[in-house]
Length: 345
Image (cartoon, rainbow, N blue to C red; front, side, top):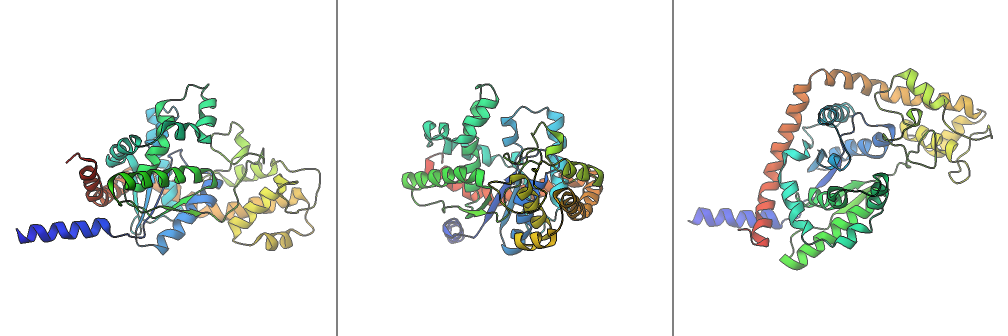
């Protein structure tokens, strides 16, 4: 009896303790593109070295908000996993897992959805934009996936979340949901804070007014991590700039050239000023090839490692399954306490 009491005391202490914990996720869209790598994955690699509790998830449940063939989704999950590992994510230093293998994500999303205001979700710009792209016939999943995002974060009592600028509003929703839950059921969730990337947002090579995206219909607009050197050279050669040949950095008036400068700085680790000094005397046509070569050198070892990993799909599956088991162990006591707080047990 005394042992049981001590175990309960220990559990209460573990649940109340605030641990510095990082959570982030990526949708399985296949091999990531340059913007994914520079804006998120590169940051993930750094964070796994700096924190003792880090979780990275392949967000396969979120991917269903846009129509997907099952066979395509299965392959995309493996390709995304291979790419993340090739970029330097180490399952020994973090939990890397597939979201749908931890059912508590969906179960907590239902609980949180029951305390989330519908008008709040309708105001989110992503809902308006994606719903419009689906002829204003957006699904319930498309509307409520920000609540699932909140569950992803809160299930592990995460304290820090690497996000892009376009996801800040979703993190603010997660903070609001956590506050609402704490007010209703008592202080439980810590307030997750954003870790914003210092890398400038990478733009489309064909339309520098838009961010780089896998869904871009223009094939030359997006550089993928696994692109061949020939493909990378072609895409940068066709990159939209302007009629001024000098290389300068002015995102407002010269977005195309400035995007190239941002990419060059990000892949080399140089500052914008240092990149411009190197580009002095080059016209934009020659500079495009300098940037292309820098990207090729950065991605060459990653591309080779992706190919190796893709040849062993069972290894990729095991990595995700092992990571899910560890994530479940972490989530289980937290979720059981949530069940108790809301009255399920």
